[in-house]
Image (cartoon, rainbow, N blue to C red; front, side, top):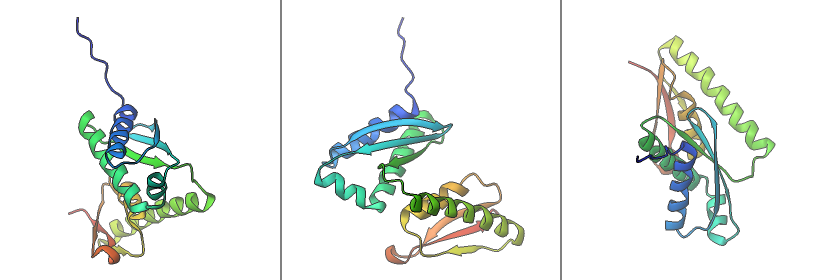
Length: 160
């Protein structure tokens, strides 16, 4: 009898991130856990110069998390959100993320009621991704980003 163990989202996500970082020449300890259905948090720790660059580059972090989420989702044929945790959760960062989540919900309600689109400027890629993720399952609105690299903005629009 051939029994194949089903890999968990946490295992798939951590294996993907470990492999990707190794390919990039970044040495890191990777530990993942499923924090909610469809959500994986991957804790990263390292002490070399390449890891320090990753830890400072929020755009690179967002790209790694997005790729890990896509790879994990594809492997499981289900939507999985992946978040990277560098152990640097500060009260300010947590408050900013909570503010962005609340703002996204309020803006979505306004767009749904008015039928008019809204523009959010001044967000870095990680913050834009947070808003996209917060609203991706919203039935009345959709989001996308536009603009050049240094002038990107996020649009929240009614679903047609």
